Every structure is written in C-alpha cells, then in structure tokens.
Length: 103
Image 1 (cartoon, helix red, strand yellow):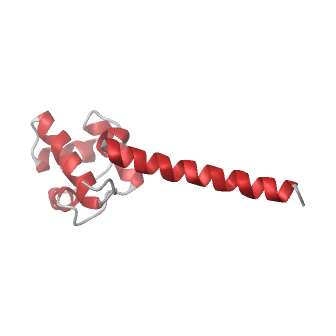
Image 2 (tube, helix red, strand yellow):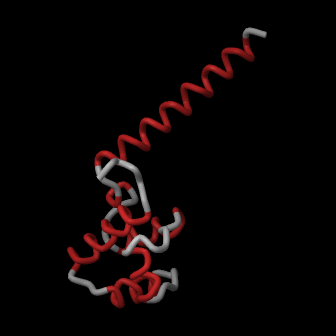
Image 3 (cartoon, rainbow, N blue to C red):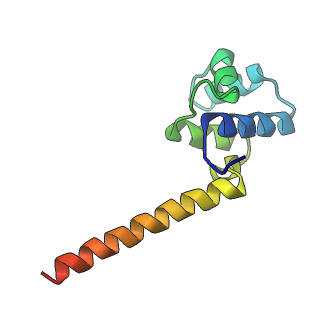
C-alpha cells in the first residue's frame, strides 16, 4: 500500500471488518438498512471491490454498524497522509493570516 486513501483500500477494510463480525455482504446491507441507511448487497459488493467510493457520511454509519470508527477503516500510512495534509493546510492558513496581519 502506498499510503494513498483509495476506494479499494477503504473497501478492503470494510470487508475485513465485516469478516471479523462473521457477516456476509447481505447481512451488512441489512444491518445498514436497519440502522437507517438503506443499502443493498450489490452496493456493499461495489464498495468492497473499490468500484464505488464510500462517501464520508456513509462511512460514519458503516463504521458504527461494524463496531469500529472511521479511523478504524484507515491504516497507519493513510492516517499519516491525512494528518500531513491537515497539518499543511493549517500551516498555510497561519501563513495567510500572518500576511494579512502584516499589511
């Protein structure tokens, strides 16, 4: 894994979490529907195969149903990548604010 968050990397972790619960794709789809997020088995299959991205708002429900968190659906290198991007964004915002304050 290169550390890049991709639909496939997330899908693989969804599958792993589902497997840990001993569920098949239909059972996950039924649990999501029961939790108020209707999703069919074909959609679960596409997400796990990386053919359909798991949207952020969906990931909250998927993680909860699977007994994990959004962070639990990422590996360490992906978390570092997200953290680095966040840090770079904060530094950029600080620099912009400092330039504005010095005008």
